[in-house]
Length: 121
Image 1 (cartoon, helix red, strand yellow):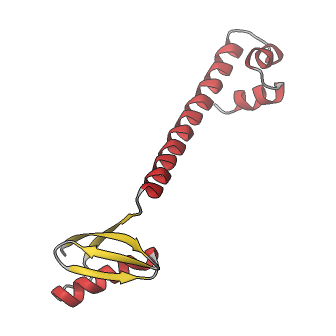
Image 2: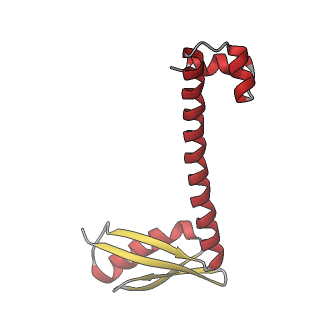
């Protein structure tokens, strides 16, 4: 099975799909672009079930959206690290002999939250 790369670019109401080394086709939606690229490859080369990667090209709008998606992934990773750290700190403080009420006040959380964190070992 051969591997092909294609680029889908929006033009008017259509997505123009340029399959490298094969040709150009079009589809109404980006979701259909993969099927149309596979169909083009089969029609031109006779190869069925080709491995095709279609990359959408939508200019700055897509670039901004992808940057936002990357920022969300970083924020989620930071949030998980912070949750792990607060859980670890809670356990350390409790092990050092501080009461749940003291730990709650130091960390700015409720006593119930301290109890939840302490039970997630």
